[in-house]
Length: 350
Ligand code: BGC
Image 1 (cartoon, rainbow, N blue to C red):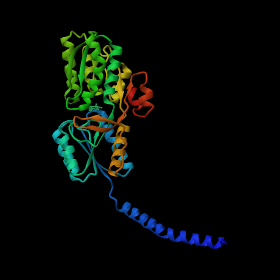
Image 2 (cartoon, rainbow, N blue to C red; image 1 turned 180 degrees about the horizontal axis):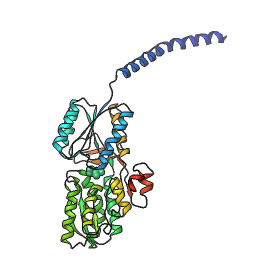
Image 3 (cartoon, helix red, strand yellow; image 1 turned 180 degrees about the vertical axis):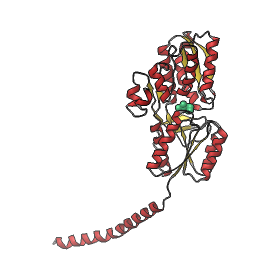
Image 4 (cartoon, helix red, strand yellow; image 1 turned 45 degrees about the vertical axis):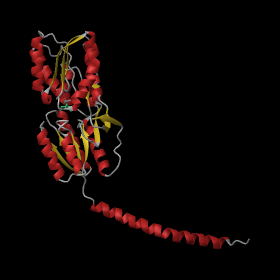
């Protein structure tokens, strides 16, 4: 067969040209549509409900969120309820009325906040449970730390320093699911030693609203009831540890009795350096806040936020992202808290 290659080449090229014409035109039209959609897109509006600013960490969560929102041109609407479930409910209703695209909530009351989640869902708004888990309802995503592990770290640290003796065991606010997880983790270490008879738990109490004055009063009572013979105190966070250490100081025992903590607050870091608080647990709120906002953006855009585990909330296994807590004592305080820029050296060493 006599094949005319140049002619065939021209024919093939022409065919390819005509086949591609409509594809090219469609692509151009698509690009235009995307540009138009972007130009018309309203700024993403993210609602945030925080429970308090009484513990320094929540101030830092709020700061990071505001900075991130500003940098990324997000319309962030933040409400803070000051340990009041009813107020948090109405603040969230308010946020929903403002047309938020997604809600991030750290509940004051884990159980009653279910109503907030249900209301958001009725309006087609997804909810991220932030740091604290909302119980008994369908939560879209939980972003927190491994809170059981926080308690394990506290329990191990305390029992290493005081393997025997009289213990005061304080839990956080009973309305906060985290408090139960921290205590569960700590007791997984302490209870076997108590069962063996090495440790005697002379007081076991929750601290309403995580209030340092409540913690102080409880420790004062336990000291009186036990002739000041206390060998270790499980304080659930730094703020309550502050109250505990005040009570110990009044009895001349500050620095002599191991006390735990959590949050890496400036004042706690000062106490760790001074030796009146044995340890704290660092939960990087900068990372937590950024992770939550990034996940929120993905969810609003219909993308997968990338959960890596699940935590049960009595109703379902909630898809979760859990960050890692780190023990801090005077040996690694500079490396973990100061070198990472979380705390300033001039604030810690005063
Ligand atoms: C948080 C702690 C905080 C406590 C009191 C908990 O839910 O995880 O970091 O210290 O609430 O605000």
